[in-house]
Length: 390
Image (tube, rainbow, N blue to C red; front, side):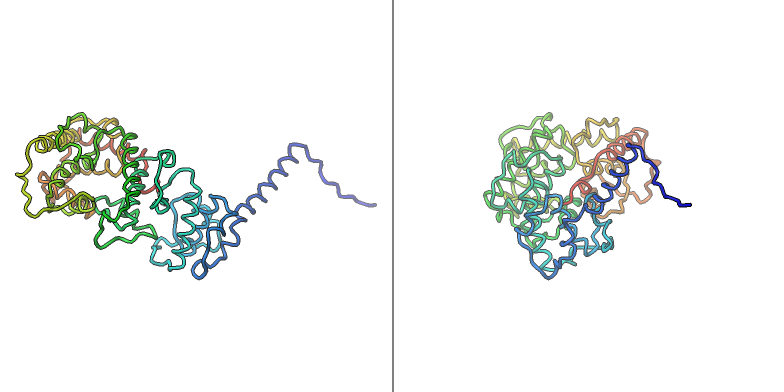
């Protein structure tokens, strides 16, 4: 007797499902086929040209950038680069990676890759500004961005020339992580070209319009003979209010003892420090404007401790600024902060009195409620550091 093996009959839906599954497997196997040659390319010893990347999509270009860093184990925040690297058998994650591991050849190749990416972006992205050192930006090319992204874009223009941002720790950390960043021993804002200055002004204008604020740090020149109304200060963080108040002094040449303030104004092209300046020299509308800003600062400062905070007060602020507001509630009671920059920041204010015996028990019910509101905002909002990886 002969036995014949019979294949089971498959229903049409099941057959289609199997075909789709087979196609999915093939696609998964083929997903990064375009990058195969780049995975074995020795970026540390060989050079690349822009034309070499012509066949690649913008998405693949980003992954090639990931390969250069990935060979050294860099762990990316970008989900697409991270997923790609984690799928590679050659990738060995190293949380201790830093840019000092890149040699000159790798850095030059990264420049070519990064510029190739920038050229293909429909609108400018953080990390693109080196392409626009001699190109004038337009509103259309700039597109839409978050507050944090606008800040990075404008700061990047200055960072290219070595400016440090010690007064804004998250921003300084961001640039410290850029392979191309070289902090200058003495940053000179006058080294910016007219095109770069024009690009800075445009970014600042768009960011202000998006935030719907009437005044921002850098504007006090416009109010040397004009009074500021309290309504014009709405929407600014306490940190920004402190900057514009001190800007009035800075425009008269005041030299600041507080390091983070001096570093901030030392990076402004208009700042001209004068050894003989005295605070008493401030008079007229400048003096009145300082009083108006101080009164509004005190109002906001007291509000976070004496009145319930609403989301409207927080809306539009960076998470980093909101955290300063949260820490200010603790600082009002003298909490000593473990983070050195935070401690120095609050120690620079006359109202801060360090209390080594501080405990949360000293917080009022309103303050505790405000901490809850701030924590909820922080949880939903995204930090500048986690959204940007230029």
